[in-house]
Image 1 (cartoon, rainbow, N blue to C red):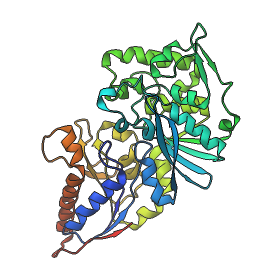
Image 2 (image 1 turned 30 degrees about the vertical axis):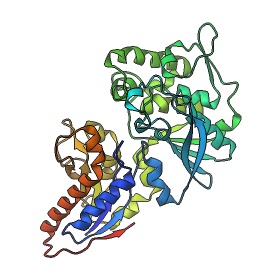
Image 3 (image 1 turned 30 degrees about the horizontal axis):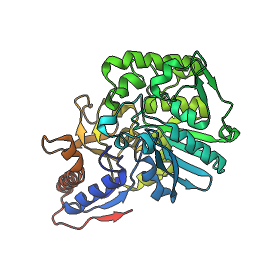
Image 4 (image 1 turned 90 degrees about the vertical axis):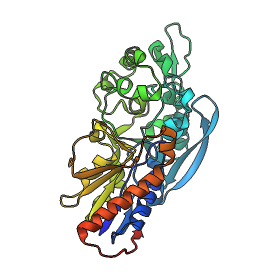
Length: 382
């Protein structure tokens, strides 16, 4: 049996590469006679760049930019020829922000704008930005300031570019934005289709997990709406504009970005459609599978691109109670890896061992159905 390991990262725990390696170790311990093809993925959120670098032969580079709290920090991105890849989670991902400092209205995305200016001035023509997994909810205000935009209140005072000041913006100036920004072919890859505002928008759906109290949702949603009523009213109709705390809306409005489905863009880059035809089974995974997974996150995106007749199995950190009944979208079964109740810290730290054990169990189950009598050693194809 030939198995394609195509997991996403387990947020705040393991990279997609780390997940794939743990799954491979589990299958190698099992009774299943198989070949393993590793294809770690990302869909725009944390780990997207790391999942692509090896497969595409890209190289890492670093740039010193302004960090999420105004401090200097190194922002890592990947390049090859005229293409550059970066993910906003590398700057303001949840894993980058300590629990006691999580306030999505005070986290700055300024450094992302600085990086885009650097890439444009360095001659990169195509830039792909992973928009997801962020701890911010600023509508891209900080990023726009990093590009050179300035924001003023009704009295003409220049505002600090933070989400807490969205409702105060009365005038926007682009006088300091370099012309090269307009020449970038900027593609935004995201795993969500949420609009910018409203009950399904950035604030109501995602800001709670970033530290915003529920009592503030209505006020912050209204502030986002007021800002974009001034900056770009057409953005309210764009599916996916709410990704990354409204960063997608900001990149479209202030940098001319184009939104695409994150997982489809990544699968195209990795030539997935050809690779999947050569396997008998596809294994997908993410940290938590829930109702949102059906909106286009990596496991569902892979399943939808997998030809009929090739089954897909999901191995995930946990299955939320709003998860669908399987089979669904070509995923025939889903296995959570958490063996017992424990603290979040311990659960995240044990992800690798839990993945390995679960993959071994799945391999043994598959071996039973295929009539394996002995224990061969699984082989990997990277």
